[in-house]
Figure 1 (cartoon, rainbow, N blue to C red):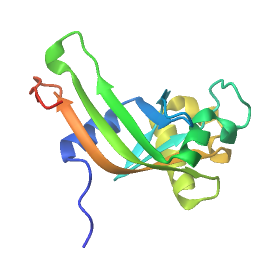
Figure 2: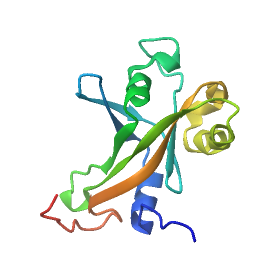
Figure 3: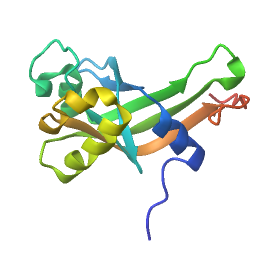
Figure 4: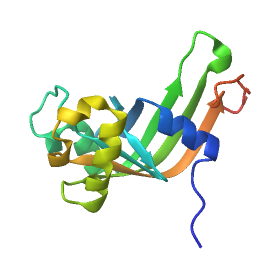
Length: 157
């Protein structure tokens, strides 16, 4: 019997339609490292390419977020919507375990078309030849108007 999804249908739609998320990894000293990412959602898996946007290091496998993931694969992702109309505010906080997908891996190759469909900038980038971060989602917490309507406040947040 399949395991139920970590995300509700409403959360899944909210996350899948988002343009960016904030990836939080943990540094060797225990500090959070936050970086905005592009991504696609496939069930309970998020895939984010180590794309060709300018980076401090040339080799994507040397990026700080990759070093963090290799040392401590537990991550958090925050997908949020800001609006001046506060009745439209909403967020989904995701927790999971991250690994690196290398070119040629079936999941890596399967993510290329959806990433290029979602982000036109990837049409000319070699995301097919660069690693990607794979996040297996384990938990989700949400707050606000995920459907774009009024916020339903959760005092526990």
